[in-house]
Length: 221
Image (cartoon, rainbow, N blue to C red; front, top):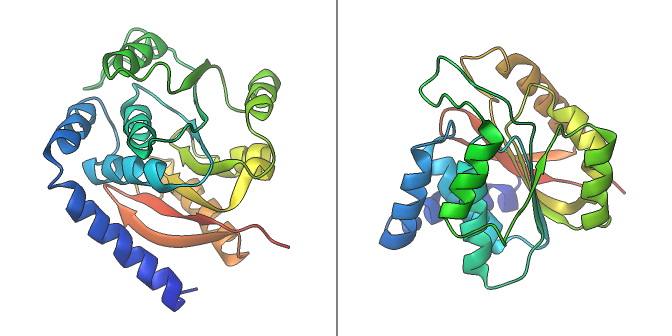
């Protein structure tokens, strides 16, 4: 770890983040999405950037109200390429919260539609680890076809990496929320990410927002 290439890529991400702040129309759209996001603004900007430059499709687990979904969709649209994009959200209700929702999946769909991105992403209403969901995702992505994996669900990212790991490309970008967090998700998430890093499966590139881990997936030969 901490190879010259890894360090250079970490600095490149920081530089890109600053440059996006000068793209007024796009940055304005991303800040509108931040109004209904639990992710930091910088994370949304980098999701947009990575979705634009990554090779392969995008898989998001835990869309919630769709801020990261919109960010990734804007990035795909800016790339000018046809990229497969699947976003998984079980839905339900959220009470007593600044982002309270009576119907999470309905609000997710509404936000994606308002951004004009319904034709860019396939929204799946279900749990990521249900067999029907896994089958649906694997129908859309062949082995090694996912270039960006976004996880902002519960505290078990390893479970979903095990479910979809064969679909992740070597060098697949990984965005994993709650590596650092005031919630009880942080401990298990950090332990799982650190274990995969120690095994040489994950390469860290930085932390953004309020503790979102960004790095790459490394396929072992």
